[in-house]
Structures are given as structure tokens and as C-alpha cells.
Amino acid sequence: VPRTHTSPTIIQMLKTLSLTNILKQNKKIEAKNEARTLLTFQNHVDPVTYPVAGSETASLITIDSEDLNRLKVPSFFLTVCDYIYSSLAKWIADEEIEKSKRKSDNKPTAEELCASKRQCMDGSVQVKKLLGTAAPIQFPQSLFDTEGCVSVPLPFFLNKNLRIMIDEAATLPTMKLNPLPGKTKGISILDIGKLANRFGHELSITCSQWTEAAENMYNFQKQRDKAGASGQHALWYNSHFNFFHEQRKRDELYDAWKHIELEYRKEHRSSYNVFALEEYVAGFKTCAESAKLRAEMQELIAS
Image 1 (cartoon, one colour):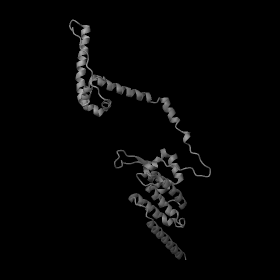
Image 2: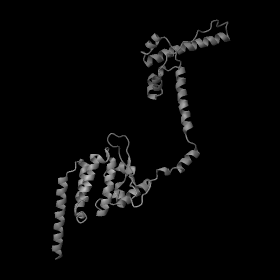
Image 3: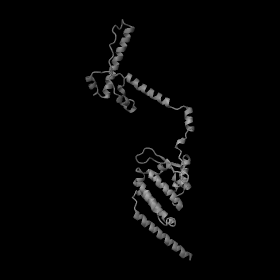
Image 4: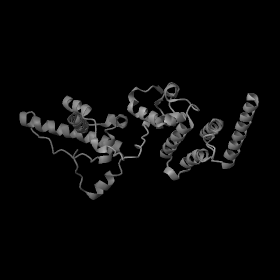
């Protein structure tokens, strides 16, 4: 696109013109330039019929780079397409051709695609295993996607089940959800109903398994907290699981308190309430008393 008009006064006046007006003026200028060029050609070919050559062509008004980039956007181009002139249309077409060439140049060959599928492992990210310590637990992205939509049962956080979710990620049953509020596309999440038959339902694990899964769920929820371990979301799960973990008769009374542990977890998800220690103390006391009464009744019946 020609860039002349060196007079400061003219340049300043041209800056006030809208793009539409610039295009209109340039279209007229280019039409006159083409007429001049044709007249010069005719003068050379047939000087008798056309004794006078065309005058020098006029320069086009410069279009700034931002407006030129806008013309590459189809929706914007349609608003001014009636004023596009030949040289500008050629420039836009050349830009598209160059863009297509760059895409074509960057497109991998069949051999490169094949190699990329085969050479897909990066050994530099391997984790060093320390003797006497458990391997670090990784949480698959599918677990984060699922927890954002539905509650993931505690048994899913057993070490063996987390490894299955990583090792068999591509073959695990999933379900497609409708778009969430404010979103335009639905997402696929783990099919909790089907997987629970394999991984275990809530309340189906032992007390020792509960301890393992609770620690993993806390670490998982800690990663979901925007503030990390110091965030209120993570601290709630820390307080919640630690309360039951620290009870002196935790193992003995597990069957009595595991129901309220689940109830408090569900209530927190639905109402997102803060941790209330007094409620936990009262709830655990009630569970302990109920367990004691049941034991006494069983002894009475047995006798």
C-alpha cells in the first residue's frame, strides 16, 4: 500500500478521516490512476489516435496498520467491502495466501506425525522414588473435572483407585454433561455410578481405608483451593478429617461415626458452611452414646 503525503498539514488532516472515507477517496484516486495509465499505454501504442500521454499517477492515502489488520477480519471487511479498490484487494489476498503458506509450511509430514505418536514419552519428568516412602499420589484431570460437577465418593481416593484412574484413563466410563451456567460447551466427567461398583460406594470402606482416602481427599481439595494449603477451603477439609482422625476411640466407634462424617461432608458441599467444632463434638458424643446403648442392648439380649 503506497505511503506518501509528506506535507505535515495534509498528513494531520488525513488523520482525521475515517477509514470509510479514506477507502472512498482511495477508490476514486485509483480509478483515475488506472485511466491515466491506460491513456499512457494507448499513447505509446497509437500516438496518432492518442497524441497525449496520461499524467503522473497520484498517491493513495495511507491506511494505518491497525485498520489494515481489521480489514483481515471477515465481519469487519463486510462493512466496508463496497469501497475496496483493486490494489487493496490484492494486498488482502496476498496476506491470506502468505498465511496459508505459513500454515502449510508448519504442517508436519506424515513421517513426522507418525514419529510424534510413537515418540510420546518424556523420561526427564520421571519421579525419583525414595526407599521407605510411598510414591507421590497424582490426581488425574478427570477427577478435578468431575468434582467440579458432582461429589466424588471417598473410596475413589484410595491409592489403588487413584492409580487405576491414571493407568486406565482412556477406558474408564464417562458421561457428557450439559453446559454449566455461563458456559457454552458441556464436558465429560467420570461416570460415578458405574465406577462406584468397582471403586466402592460411600460407607463401604474400613477405618484404615478411610484414613488413607481422607488424607488423599484433603490433598486433592488443597490443590483445588486458590490459596493452597492456607486457603479456607483446604482448611475446612483439614479440620473435618482431623477431628475424626484424632478421636481416641476412632477405630472402635468407626461404624457409629462414619455416617455423620459423610453427612457433614455432604452438607458442606451443598451449603459451603464453615467448620463448626461444637457441632462435631456434639455429633460424635451422640454417636458414642448410641453405640454404647446398642452394645448394652446386645449384651442384654444375649444374656
